[in-house]
Image (cartoon, rainbow, N blue to C red; front, side, top):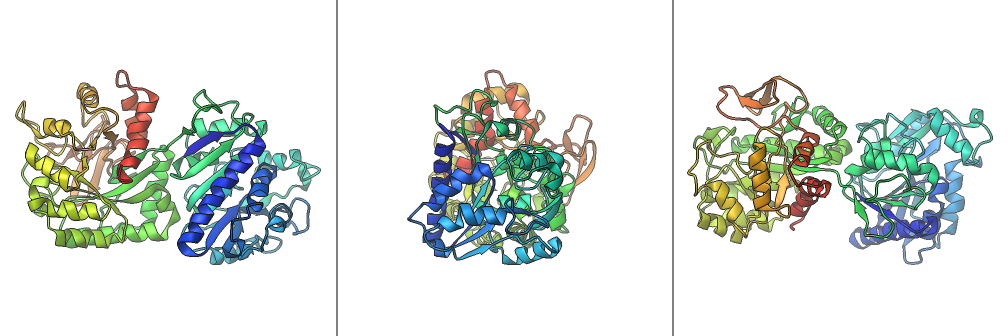
Length: 560
């Protein structure tokens, strides 16, 4: 998420409109048509006026939706959002849009939600225009908002703070006149867009802006969920930004408030992403639990097993990603860790050694095809890929290829990097407890100057704090990435849990052990825990923490 503070409300509106127009133009060039969701209210007037004035947009190929509407209010009422959109936007367009799907909630509101759902595009919207309410609401999703709602439109009760805002803005003469219910687009459907543009001017919004950007990422601050969107921009003016910390400035470059991106999440809240009986409801619950902990986004990770078992698990996750916007809100792809790794003790770690195998392009193709474009990262052992053919093929598919559970020589590591290897997975783990003092895989990875990225698990358990500080100084913040490697035991406290076919025991200190307590089996930490551990590293700044948990992982996935 990017935050921009503009000179005044008019400049804010022009900038927001420019951003929306650019995305719509790209969508039109790409697919011949586009979809736009518009917001209403005084805060949106400048943005809608500037967007309507754009002469370069083919409105006849753009379908328009809107966020919310009061239940029981006729279309010609001065406060009706349909009327606002017609007068402030549609009537000013050079050409009529392809369609305007108005919310008509005078009658059966639940039936109207079903009708609207049938009109939605099958994939993400191209652009969503939004605002932030004085109570922190997003559309009419008042606090506490449902971050995991399944339906795209909901009938909701309006809280008193929301209703008082409508009176203060002059839409109604008294609180008694304001409807108590509304139809609103749900939070997951709002977030399911390629570009989210929020226009938030005015001092009345300052407290809500501060809560959304600097407070907890939680349903009690609905707009805080915007921090999880990778292509959201919050446009502010000096008045709405007045309560923010000093990093938000009108003079410098746009500030970034990025949600974490965890490249290695095996599960959370009792849910194992590698389970054969995994359901979409379980994945939704895990995603909601991750969001409640401020976990941002992640790659759902599956570990070594037979090729048929991995194909089934990857296909299942791909289906959930394609069909459920709540899942897409948190999970941005799949990380396949194994099965092309070393099978010997120590290096195999928590993976079942019977299924560790040499890499082949043919089997890698099966795994990638099962993901239908959602496999974003693969971890393998370079020394188990003859001629680096698999590494090269995976890199050609745009997949982040990482070394892990491996012991390549320095030459093998350099050859793998030349073929397309770009990352090392969880440095210091997936290797024996006892290693040669000077020539070992940890030193080789750190010393390999053609290896752009190195991940580690700074959960306070996997890497002792002195070693963590030493490694970060040696690697540098420009190459380091923090991952959680969290399993189903994450957020659950002490107990016994499953990771694939294994039993995991979590002790009182939060360490997750194999049944025989010979090695750790993933982590129980959330990304909030990871950030706290990093913040305690001597000399580490808040910007460094953000770089390791948000900026660098996104750069790595993008091919940087």
